[in-house]
Image 1 (tube, rainbow, N blue to C red):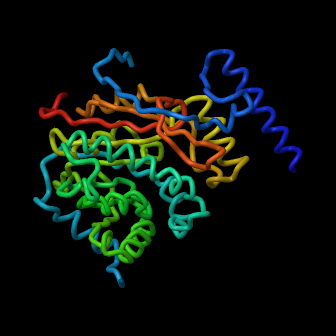
Image 2: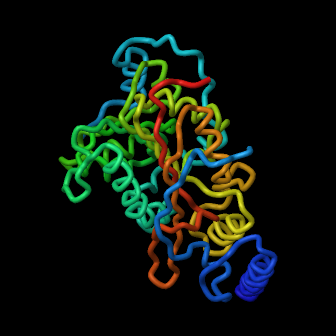
Length: 331
């Protein structure tokens, strides 16, 4: 078995070399890192969206959800009906491992390792956009932020500790229960509002936020375009949207699926479908159609020697985008 794994690794390294020679992707590490350089060193990239683009005991979470989503802050809105972005197969997949959200050595270990880097990008982008002090202990004080597809609350808790008024939503009720229990252990996070709901349900309830975040979610929804329309409806005009996902590239297939799922066993097999990944250009275009202009983009890369993630201008595998909703809707 070990010999077979070694032969697969050698094959991937040789493949990576050929891809590089063919110009399909460019790497910055020695050739021996062709696969583990899933993830390379990186620096921030400003993205111009106007460039030419051609193409304690807790209540039952479901009872809480139904009450809030039905009534909301302003009753049922008059927005057009939005199709649900929920994907039943993906819901079942994550429900099966919901109990492991806060196991730092479990299936979500990569998210725990990546979270500080994700938060670094979010902190920088939102502080600049909302004119907040990035050196403040609680720079998001006064901001209403929603974490769409919050899972067990890894990102939601980080946002709450920075002072944000956080709402976390997820379609897996087990995730919401786990998130509520864990958040209740810390006074700084116990105020997070967790709801078992889709983004579309909150749109119907007239909920809006200063910033809408959906990290590592869009590759699991039924329709990315419908999902982005819902995200746009949830953010106030002039508000911020942050989305992170995986690029649909050969390098992403080799690293995020073959290496991460089948060789290294970092995440459960079948977590990702390469065909559901979006390229940065596709995401920019989808967001533009939803009245969100992408202003900044960066890549996430993994440093094999340190076991840490960092930001980069290399978006060939994992990437994150920051956009602003127009003050007037465009059709």
